[in-house]
Structures are given as C-alpha cells and as structure tokens.
Amino acid sequence: MFKRRGSLINYLQPYGYCGIYVPRFELQPLAVLARQEDGSLFGNIGLLTSIVGSGTPIPFTIQAGEPFVPLSGSISFSLGAAIGMDFLGNMLTVIQGADVKLELQVKKGSSLHFSFEEVMQDRVELLQIENYLKRVPVRLMQVGFARDLQRGKLYIVTATLRSSKFSVTFEKARAIGLELGAKTPWNVGEGTLTLSELANTSTARMTYNGPRPLVFGFQAVQAVYSSSSYNSLKLLKSEAMRGTSASGYRMLNVEQASGYDS
Image 1: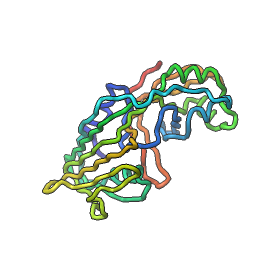
Image 2: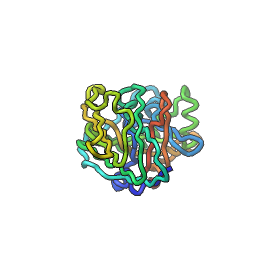
Image 3: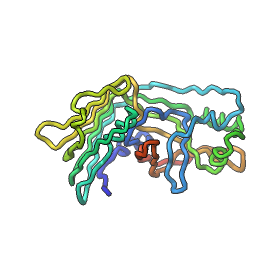
Image 4: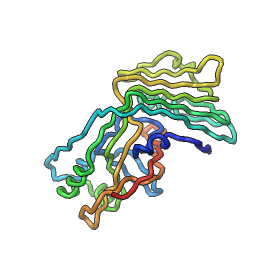
C-alpha cells in the first residue's frame, strides 16, 4: 500500500538488529518466536528454558542494561491516496492495555521521524545458547513446540534494544481522535504518553517517557536440528514478521536485518 524510501531497518541494520515498528514491553533474550506457514514470524510463545530443558534450571548470564547509541531517522511514504494508519492506536494498546482507536490520516508524501533516547541493550552470548541446546533434551511435555523446533520453525531471541524515552512524529498527517483527552499527558503504567498536533501544521507527534522501557529492536537465531539432535545455529534472515494480539490489532510489524549462517 505504501513504499518506504527509508526505514527503521536502515538505521538498525549496521548493528545487525531487526526493527519493530510498534515497540513491545515483553520481548527479551531467550524468548522463542514461531514461524508461520507463510514464512512470517509470530512473537513470543515462551522462553527457551520452558521448551527445551531437563527440568533442572541451567543459569544463563544475560548482559542487561548495556548503554547503546541513541538512534533516530526518517521514513517517507509514497501514497496513491490518503490512508488511515492505526500506529497510535496500536501503540496505546501495547502500553496501556486499553482498546483505544486513534488513527492517522496520512497524506501523499508523508514522512515519519523517530528518535530513541537512553537506549539500552540486553543480550545473551550465542555460545551459552549453543552449549545449552547441546546438553539438554527437548521436553516431551511440549510436543508441538518440540516438533517445530526440530523442523527449524522456532527462533530464539539473543539480544534486544530498549528505550524508556522516544518520540514519533508524522508530517502531513492528522491525528483523528485527539479530542478523546490525548492533548494532555496520559499516565501509562508508571510513565506518560503524550499525543499532540503541532499548531498551524499538519503534523502529529507521539512521545513516551517512563521508567519501563519498550523494546524496538532484536536479534535472533534459528536452531537447526538433525532428527532429534541439535546441529547448529543460524542468524535470522531477512523476512517480514507479523503478529496479532488478543485485541485483534496487528501488533508486531517488523523489518529484519539480513542474516547469515553461523
């Protein structure tokens, strides 16, 4: 429906990260993602240790809260006609857990500008995951997931990027529904979310600031099995990732960096 002349992936790809257009709270290292029949990925079905393991916990050392560089960039949209985007509604649903429908009416030639500050990286070493998979069996109680794992349909998150302060600005756009009280900061969990239209412009802006950071980028690997025995890891290859939340919104809309075999 639209063509991106630049995108979040352009700014994360040099770091080997996949970009998430609608940031999430819950994504973390060792989370397992499932690949659907159409090749897309569906997010977070559980942790690796809940699918593969001997019942005896094996500790992972997760490097948490490592400072990362601030990230910002722009995305341009080339549209044949004005369309509605539910980015803000999705964002509110993720943060607030409420069914709030706020749409953007986007005009031809619109641009999106994003900025993530106070970026932190959480990661787990690939060697730890590989040693774990070599040592422990797939749990029989998770037969379906075990089969998917052995068929190469599951991916393991190895690192995430998160930020507790970011803003998204849409130019040549009008936020529909701002009269619903969004002109003043909303309390969302322990943080605040501000939606506004800049005076005398066709620009809508969303700003989030809070102690609970949102994940907007991740790295993942595919576990390769031969029969029922672990073989190797492959870094995630480029493909679209989408997921649907319980409320029906398409919550995970991700561009992924080109991967390569380990």
